[in-house]
Length: 186
Figure 1 (cartoon, rainbow, N blue to C red):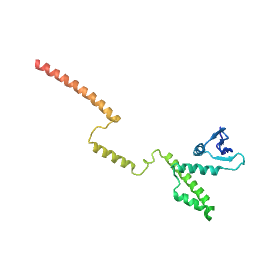
Figure 2 (tube, one colour):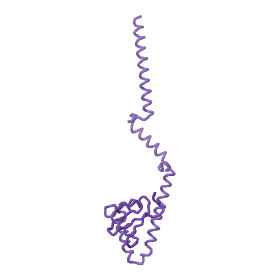
Figure 3 (tube, one colour):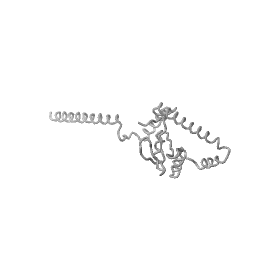
Figure 4 (spheres, rainbow, N blue to C red):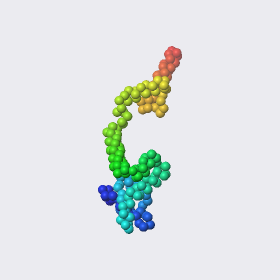
């Protein structure tokens, strides 16, 4: 079983092929992106020199996604990034970006936590119950007493009762007709 605590080591061979050291097979950039999306840290090193190539390959993954129309980075952000390489802002930008993404991750975690605490977050909204009752009343008035389809469970029970009641009523009518026939003979 892979150790999720330490980064997944990917070695780049001279042929530029990427080798997953845990599973002993070759991987693609899309495979590496999948590992990262699954929450796994990766480290990509050159087999021969031992140089860390992680940043280069992560940038390549981002560039491929951007070129395929899966744009996440607005042009003005990309422009500002390019500008930051040529200004004194170069030292501040990495910390700013890291802090921004940390804040984004924390916000997402808190939002997910809040959603789990409330089974239906909309139902917890003030006035939701009153709004639901108003919609129900509106629908009843619009339907004008027409039966709904498919019938709800109470409506189906009511249909069953009414069919039973109709059968009983028919039986009573039949008995009454028979009694009237007997009376006329007398």
